[in-house]
Length: 380
Image (tube, rainbow, N blue to C red; front, side, top):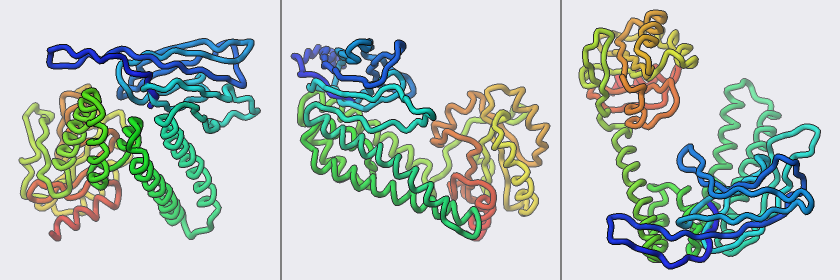
């Protein structure tokens, strides 16, 4: 996130929302290697969309840039140098001085740019520490991957398991550093950045205390913190609705004949639910394994259900007929938008197992993990 400039007088209107005052900070610096096409830009990311706040040219003679960045409220932003390097900054009340290497001049270009340092105030001092943790995490991932690859183990699965333990240790170290930053930079507005990286449940005491401190800064921050809390509480409620042991949320779906069907119709049996689509290669590669599993279980105790998220009903039916899956088939009519939001998955195949009471027993399953989950559910 990027720093903001000194707040002008906030204007509050007697409406059910707040109108933010316009603020501006100034960023300047030097770029070591440039070409005639390079520009500097500052943007904020709203979900998957870039909201560009400012664009400026780089002086070809002095190789310097100067850019005024307008914004409506404090927060994170990204300063991009010609699509070669970027750095996260905090927008609030600090003008910044940031130098870049710029264009990669190596014979072989590898997307591993050097760390970028921000010269500003305390808010961006914290951003330097956050950014360095991100940069260092990536460097360690590369180093650990090389070391794991050099280790002689019996088979590839052991090597993968060893690699994952190294990666988990790297992630744990980054989490510890994030907690340290939140604890010792709680006076900075930019602490909002590392706070958002902490677990809402596991680190709740630290998160709540820090948010309370931010909310006390101003009415603006009270509003921003309130919005964030509402968002996290809504997500926590959604997490609880699809937690292991929760009754699986209903899904609006139809059969090939156009009849409505729901998960509750399968109660009394262990149910394997496979979310898939005709265009998904990994989904279709999983089907032969699913057929083998299906044939190995008693049909009076175990049922399979494939739910297509194809946006085109015709393509679903064509793929269904090609695959000749002998179990129940259904289709959601909105291309999976609602079910992906409800069950909080973004990739397919997404396979879950429900117990005989219609409760979520296991999630994120593939291959042998499906068989193991079904066997455990039957023993329950």
